[in-house]
Length: 109
Picture 1 (cartoon, rainbow, N blue to C red):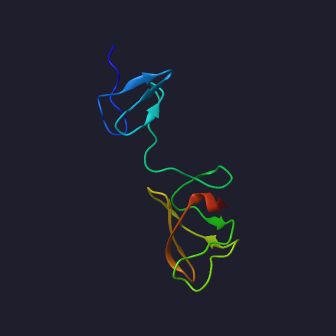
Picture 2: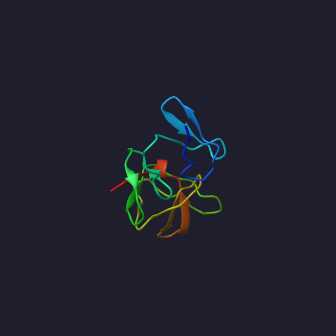
C-alpha cells in the first residue's frame, strides 16, 4: 500500500501512526482524506479562529520593549493580519505604530 506525500511539505516519507498519517520531515499530522488548511492559523483567548481584517481587543496590559508606556487592556486593534511565527498577529496600534502580537492575548470582537 502506498501512502500519500505530505500535503504541507511534499515529503514522500510519510508513515501511519494509528489513524493519523505523520510526516517525519515537518512533523505535520493529518487524517487520510482530510484537506490541509491554507495559510497560518491564529486562535484568540476564547478559542475563536482569527482571520485577516478582523478587529480584536487586547485582554491584558502588555509591556512593550523600548516604549514609554504599555498597551492597556481593552485597546482595540483593527484590521489585523495573520502571519507565521510566535507573534502571529501583525497590526498597527494607534499611538504605538506597527506591532506584532500573540493571538493568546487578544479576543475577537
